[in-house]
Image (cartoon, rainbow, N blue to C red; front, top):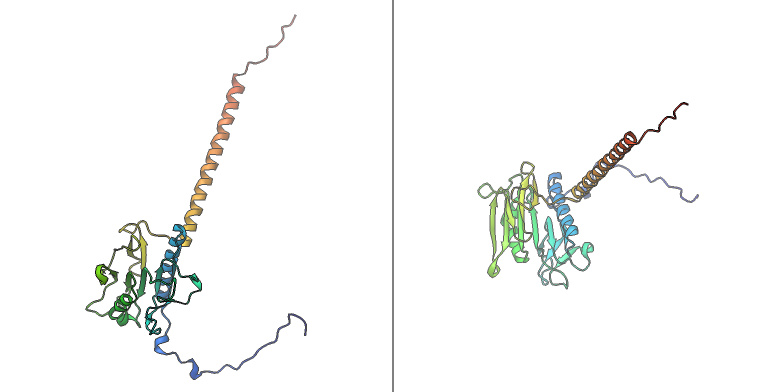
Length: 255
């Protein structure tokens, strides 16, 4: 067989197979849920890069805190841990009994239809047990129990080991861990981080940083071009002035 040749592989196409049945617990999240999470992770990773921090942000890492019961834990939709664990992005879990593993400074739960009851009733207790410093619960579609539903909740570890809800509402809310504001945007469908409560100075994504840098570069090039044109025009004006003021040669007299 010639090197690089391929062999066609043909399989039958069954209409169904019992092995493909999706369990309720494993139902994938909606695109909206993924977009919200992806945006927050992007913003946090960009912040880590531009501030040169020894930190790590990501989504759905296994957080475990009881060595005797390693199956007990929680998997945050978004997390920020500082300092970063030894293997950084190669870590598959944060096991707090392991050397170099620390509880997240911030954890985020984005409420979905399948997790609403758990996110409201169970998540604060789990994250309190995990010694997370701050928990944000974002419910963009207001799927929580009618009597307690809130768009944004902020829970914080306070003095004497208490874990308290310090904010519940439509935002903005102040994150003491980040020294920044949590702002609900896009008709309630996105959660952004900003330096001000009004949300006018939002923490950028990586793409937004690139666009801003490109705009600065473009503006600098335009200023340089305008200065060059002005200098050339001034030089031409000076040449013209010198030419008009130069003495004209006298014609010789006829004898």
